[in-house]
Image (cartoon, rainbow, N blue to C red; front, side, top):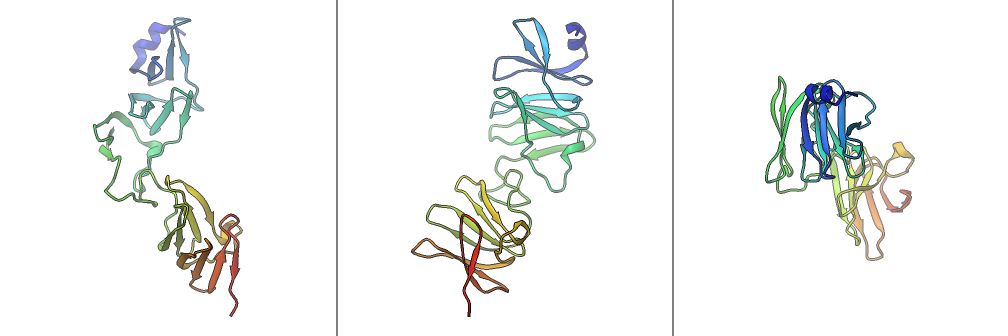
Length: 226
């Protein structure tokens, strides 16, 4: 590939955390400069990305703003694209035209979106560590109503829902398990209360099926008969 042509037709370039120069082309996608061969190597992606802007964030990732294919995130250390972790229920990232990106001192991300305006993706939406479908970073326990919560002796958060069974969330915020009738568990659909006893058993109070003891590993419920 003619390097002069590449430079002339590309729109942006940044210095990555691996000390390589990355160039974004509107027609040809993403390239990295190879000093050994004095040429540009293609950064592989399933489709050609129409790149409008590049930005290196505080996590040492390259944020790629495209003209019609949303926001992509490239990890130059592991040489792979990672999943876009930002979730906005009212906005479709897959087809958006992101023409500018900047991150402020608080870690908030500001996006300039063609024909839409400016979008703020805050690092923290509030002082509460919100978990749920409206969260930008922690959309991991569905959208059903939360009926009960219990933290066990290991710091795992057990979350009972209305018609979506039980979720367990590790202290780091990652979902450990989701037990529901849809994925093969006999756990009640609607959970009214959760309680861990002194023997570390987790008890489940349900709306229709009474009281049960939950096996935390398998999701099987042992129901207490009348």
